Image (cartoon, rainbow, N blue to C red):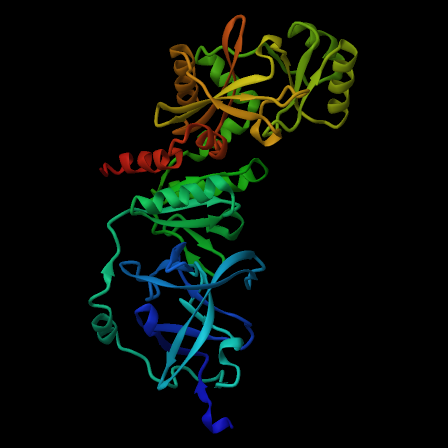
Length: 456
């Protein structure tokens, strides 16, 4: 039976006639169960009442100018664990593989393989019963010259003249991240999701670099959108700073993100810019607890961890005794805290103004669920459209400017003294505000990048 099998080396060129891919280099890997094809802009759709998926591919490694638009019947969606241990859900297609003089149907998953050395991985399920592999050999069935590659792809579409934009974040499945990727692609840009934990950097005076897992160098980006979760602020900002050193435009700078994450420093900056906040106290020693409580008007009061986010680490102390207990408990853990006056008349409501490039593009009112004083959407709060006053707009814009943030979620509370600023968020979520307002906030973020490059 072996004489009927195709003998392949560890690397071979193959083609996919039904997808319109005349040739593509594949890594032949019997250690991998499934086959995978590089794909970007992946989107499912219905065709003749059946499930299909469309996607784009840059079939030639290190050539982003040549792009082929493909579509194929959708076979399945399944979770696949990559060689780096990352588990992701992928679309699965079936199409004919042509290799040498042989052709047969195979299943492939679709995934972005930009960080890999090959646009195609041929796994053992696709080879079973048909192929023998000689791992010491390469290109046993021949390989195209650079001239023949140009000839084969002369009629393929050239990629749009859009920007190459990286989304520096942690979770590609997060609503906000998916929307930003989608908005960039819709506007003709080449979008890449860059997992913060898979990036690392080379510090060098002459040739500074950022690498991605697998050794790919990430030095050819026009712009980066940092979406850094608080738990990895230090490393995420270090990467953003490295992109800045490479003269890559960052939608929020590393310095702006760093200072926005320091709640005490950010409040000091805001006050310096003449922006009113609830009366706030900060002390190092538990011996000063009593005066600290008096300083903010007594109980009830709010106790905030400096490192808290999304309403976590925020406690309402309703009595002086409760306040003393909470403050001293945090202090015994060596935690840095802020003590802040409680604005009772706000009644569990606050206003989130979304500021992009010096303009309030949307605003919502967030209302806490019954029995809760924190209005964060992540904690079950509800969002509704609200018309903000000119004063509230002015505060939001001034706050973003004071923090030097091009994109900011500015939280304001209405008090008997007038609007007071609570917090400025450098990576504000999109789900609540887009859902309530039906506005394309992600698109506005992409427009801010285009404005920097003077694109219309």
